[in-house]
Image (cartoon, rainbow, N blue to C red; front, side, top):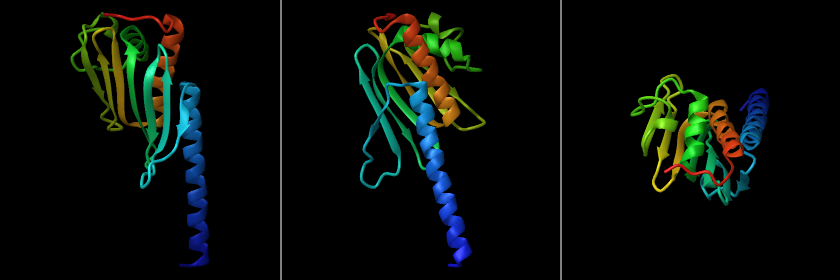
Length: 161
């Protein structure tokens, strides 16, 4: 390869690593309980995890395309509903109004622009899960931030049956 091309590729790679680092910083700022996790052998995804009493447990991965995948479980239904209602997604499948008034079940939003999928499950008895697939970092960070603020507002002991 030409030296100029090698230098251009090196510059691109440095920029990509900086972009990934700022993505991780944004996600950790949105949900401060996330901690670094070692990468699996053969996996390029960056992994962040948490396990906190009253806040459930889960992970966030940043893939090699710069998108976030989130899997949080054992989240109080009240917190999920409050966060989702605050975000005001344009349309949630299976919800006829605010999630705070919805029965237990799984509610999904698929973004046609980014191809991201947001799935919110209000479970029984009183805890559910949040699963986000292939979301742009700002969208994933917005959901994590809304969850963090909902936890703060409702306290960690809030549950909705």
